[in-house]
Image (cartoon, rainbow, N blue to C red; front, side, top):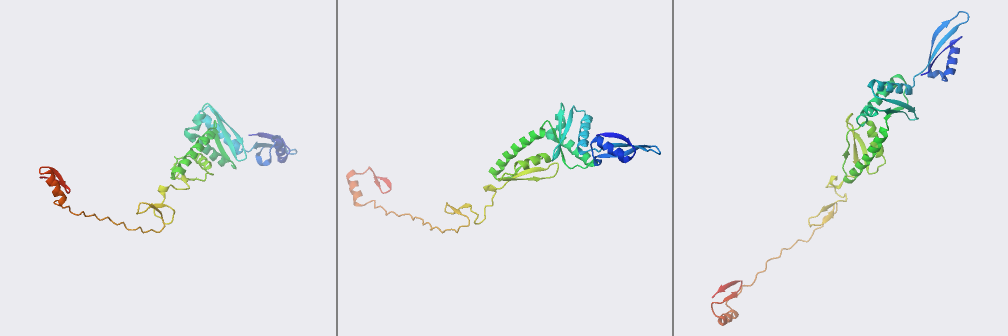
Amino acid sequence: MKEIEITASSYEDALAEALKALDLTEEQVDAQIVKQSGLIRKKVTVKVTQKATPKDIAIDFINTLIEKMGLECSATIREEDDAYYVSVSGKDTSTLIGYRGDVLDCVQYLTLLVVNKTADLDKRIIIDGENYREKRTIVLSKLAKKLAIKAAKTGKDVSLEPMNPFERRVIHSALADDKFVTTESEGEEPNRYIVIKPNKRSYSDRPRRNGGNGKFNKGGNGGYRREGAPRTQSAPVQKAEPKEEAPKDMYNLEYSRNFKRTGGGKMRSFGEKKRTF
């Protein structure tokens, strides 16, 4: 932060010279009178200090925190139209990132609290290390599309593991334009997770009995009929009655002749059974 002391004949003159030297406006500085002297020709010494901006507070806090943690890395910040982007680089950047960015998220949350307490924060603060968030975004986007295909094919909900707000935002954004699935966040922090829901349920999950919905049920005659359609009465099946065979006369003329010709002791067939004479 810039700071300067100016001595002039009046407070207004000293402040004007200080603002010109710092190239700032009156709203961007804090001014206070340090010393006054002289009775006839007064001299006023004014100390002008540039006000701390959210950008300055954020970068000072992050670098101080990194130093207190004993890590060999440093942070730089750049201001964009939508947010302040902080980039951390150095030997111990992976330690500052933590498991799936949990340490990085904690540092980002603490930074937001400090900046909001001391200045009017009008933008977001996003802290990244070695492009971790960009790499994580690519991985999560691929995972979201893969699970969306699974949900659409099976017609069943797919629940993901608990994620932080940044990761959930990536999943929602990746599937925002998908016409086959929708995404919803469920649960409470820190166990809040995303559920990918198909827009069309599988056939096994649909209600089985709902007249006129276009599904097919097996009819009683072995075929298939459309639900809601009137049942057709099939003709009753008539059972075939067993035929009675006329009893055979084992002692008719033909058998008698055969008996006389062949003689006794021969095996002959009379009717359905065989007898020996």
